[in-house]
Length: 445
Image (cartoon, rainbow, N blue to C red; front, side, top):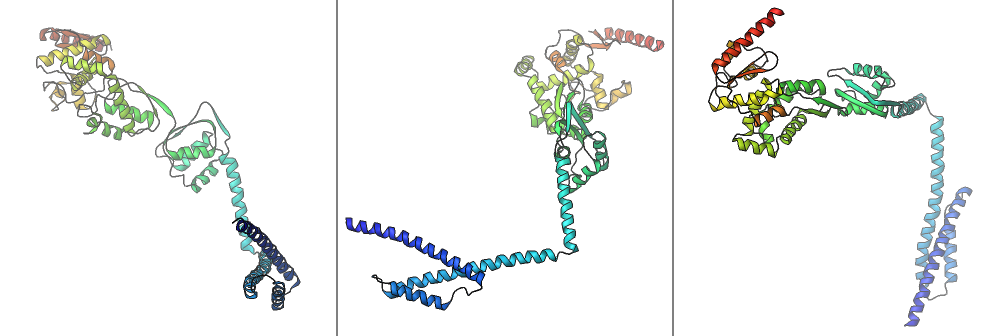
């Protein structure tokens, strides 16, 4: 057993030597092919093959038969022939390739010269573009530079404005590059803020993104209708006011937010908000409704249950209080007047609800009180179908915690306050007093 293992190890060593020798032989055959190519000799001659066979026959003194040895050497000879041939062909191919390049260079005509010129111009343009257009060179200090693109502006006017504001290096170059990259028709209206280092390319990609990075603080006062709020966002953020109103006053808007009302009038909580210029209407509406929900928290919801009323009733009364009250101390008193009238099933007779039905804030005349509308609280008993404006925190709190009074009427004093009355006779005297004050004011003017 040990003898067999020893013999196998010897065979393995011999195999390695055979492989090395075969590779050395192949290398020599390859070198011979190169030399023959240089000397112009035939790659492989029959005489040489005959000589190799004779050498092999003469040197064969082992246990292998001559026929077996010849089969092995036939394969070796075939491989040698292939190596010598490939070596020679490789050199010929290389020489032919170089000759073709030389011929192509000598035969270059005007067309080729033009192609080279165009290529050179293109390379030069790319180089200039990288230097001028991509490398940052501007620096916006402080609060940065605001770029305003108005709706309906043509591309030429946009480039002129950018050049005038000093945010691009060259108007013509910027226009050419915008056309090449098909950006010209992608520029969106809006306000864009550039801060720190920026290049023409930064300006181009920012305008093409259509996403403003300018954060704008918008203050929504108490007591505005949804249409008035839409106008503010249109002015401050460039929002589509028609789309804003349609989404907020749509039939399914309130249900989508879980608001117990016909629409979202009254539930767009008034305060200051930060939005990016060009924000979408649905984003703004959601934010304002979420703020209302945050304000009308569990404590205030518990208060509505104590009063045995719903959020919808609270918000409708609060909206009227917001429109009527000009003095904070009177909000809870005005709320008490409407609660008293509701309990006695007396029409609210609130001028702001009629103004809402008319669609404008103006002095109410007797003819206006005849308008056929569910918001006409002179003709109909009870609350209007929805709030008539978006009340603030003070009016909502006054409605949740009204004063305890016996008042059923009130009339303006002319200086922002009101005179409150418990009977109709007292109210008429207060109205006459108010009219006398108005007449004196008109006489002085």
